[in-house]
Amino acid sequence: MVSLTTNTFRAIAGAALFAALGLGLSGCNEKKEEAAEVIRPVKIVEIAQADTTRKLDYSGSVKARTDMNLGFRVSGKIVERRVDVGQKVKPGDVLARIDSTDYVLAVRRSQADLDSAEKQVQTTELARDRAQKLFDKNVGSKSQLEQAELSYDQASSTRDSAVSALAEAKNQVAYSDLTSDMNGIVTTINADVGQVVSSGTPVITVAVDGEKEVLIAVPEMDIAQFKVGKDVKARFWSDAALVLDGKVREVSGSADQSRTFAVRVSLPNDPRVLLGMTATIEALADNTQPYVSIPLSALAQKDGQQIVWLVDRNAGTVHSRAIKVADFADDGVRVADGLKTGDVVVAAGTQFMTENMKVKLSADATQQTAADTHAAPAADIVR
Image (cartoon, rainbow, N blue to C red; front, side, top):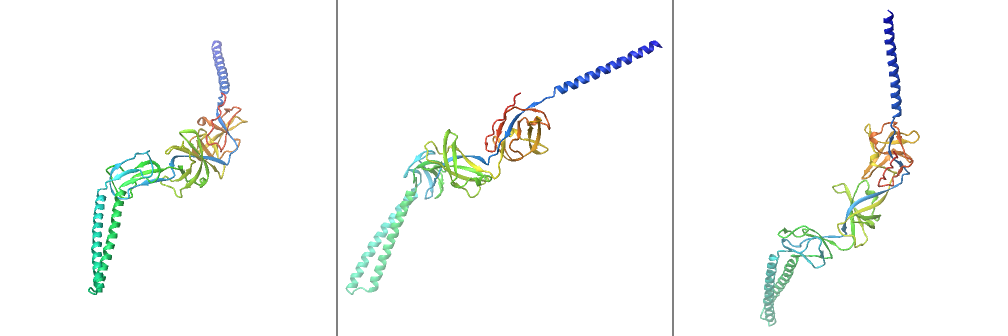
């Protein structure tokens, strides 16, 4: 009995020892987990005072203020083209020709009609003079004289008509040559040798030398910011140092099929600006309400709503806040509602954020304002 009791006691003592060791190990693990709590470093931007202006950038191409769409004044088959795109032309230069064979034949026919009319005038003139002499001698009647005078007047009218027909036929021959009326550069060729064109069909487009302008397409949300006479800046992709002062010359009264409005901006005369160059028009717009710009990486979604993660500097935690997005740009997001001056926003790594998560901040933060059109890079937090 004593031996059995001793064994039982030993077993109970061993179990208690293992239980005590288990509790000790569990307590150590909890302490290690608490000690290993991660404070995630983040990138942030601080919202500065929102401005009431924003910059509008729209790209377009340099065009001549006046384009001549030249076409033949008569119909025919094009037999010659003398110019190519980009070639300079001056008044009187022949750009293209059509087959003038039929028009030359019309000139010959009109000339023959005129010769016949001239002969008829001479014949009726002799008859009128003879009738006048007979009447003076009381040999001829008054009616014969009047008939001769009428024949002469009719022949004279026929001759005048033949003269006009001949001049018209000669003009038709001249119209078979397509000539330039002003100095300029050929920008478009719409028809070529062998093509039959009707009168008035545009064949060649010439950009007239002189004032140049930039044509841009502005969406309806910003068209109210462009008024005739508004001062803008023009920058050119080919030369970053080339910046010209421009002025809005014309604003389309209706949108085209792309739902944008054509706006023409006049440029000062500068030899460095060539037709077809790509230009960016910069204009300042007044906002009815201030917008705040944030980096695109700061935007997140939660429960179907667009949010940002705000940092509580005192607690060192993050909290979500719903925002209203005005629009998107190539380098940022414009927020219409939900942010105010002084808010600190997580600018990167939003997919790792959870409510009340501990984060590590740096002493400095990039300030982001509504006036910024290019979002500044978020400040890296020291790790």
